[in-house]
Length: 306
Image (cartoon, rainbow, N blue to C red; front, side, top):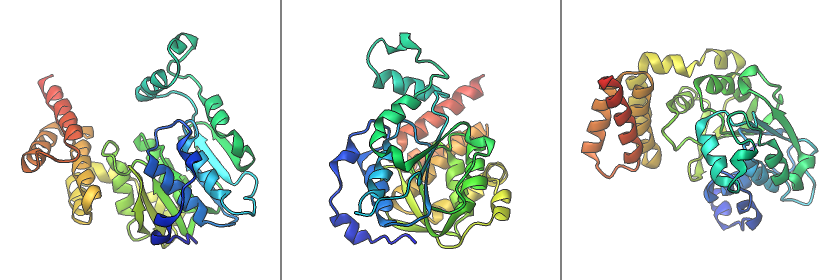
C-alpha cells in the first residue's frame, strides 16, 4: 500500500542529492518521486521507471528506497528505456547537455546514452535492473508492482504498450505516476487515465509536470487489452475531452484544454483544431498553455495551406 501523508510530506526534508543528476525532471518532480518511493517502506514489490533517460528519475526513486536503515532488495528498481536517441528533441537535448564538439564523436540519431545512465546511477547499481530496448516489444515486467513511473508515452504505440503490459501489474494500493501528464503534447495519455478513472484516485500532490494516482482497483489484463486510447481518441475526441475538462480543475483543466487542441491537430482535423484553439485563446489570452496552443494552431494552418 502507498502510505502517503500529504501534510507529513511537506515537512519532510528532501536530500539535496536528488537535485544533482542531469535530466529533464524539475525539482518538484524529483521531490514527488523521492517521497513516493520513501513511502513504500520495505515493501517487497517492484518499482518500475518506464522511461529512465539518463537516470535522474531512477536516482530519485533509489534515494527514496534507501531512506530507511533496512536496505531495499537487490534489483527492485526496474528501469526501461531504449537508451538511444530516437527522436529529434533528444538529439537537441544531448547536443546542449554535452560539451561542445561531442557531435563529432557520434551524437546522432541512434546514439546510445546508456553509459550516462550507468554513471549517474552508480551509487544505486545494486538496486537497479536495466531493461534496454523498445517498450512496444512486450518486455518482461515484474508481476507485482508497487510504484509505476511513466515517462515513455511519446507515441500511441508506446502508450498502448504501457496500458497493456505495465498497468495491469500494479497492485491495489500501488501508485502510478505520469511524469508528463501536465504537458499537452501527448493527448492519448489524458485519455488513458480518463478511461481508467474507476480504478485510479488522484493523490493530493503533484510535481512540475507529474501527477500521481493510487490504484484503488487493479486493472485486469482483459480490460487493459481493450482500452485502446488511440482508437477512442479518433472516434470520440471532442466528447472525451469535454468529459476530461469538466472533471478537471486548475492546471489539469488548462492542460486538458490544450491537449484537446493538440488531439485535433494529430487527427488532421485541422479546421476543428484552428477553431478550438482560436476560441480558447480568445476566451483566455493569458492561458497557461498559450504558446503550445499557438504552435498547434499554426501547424494546422500551415497544413491547410498545402
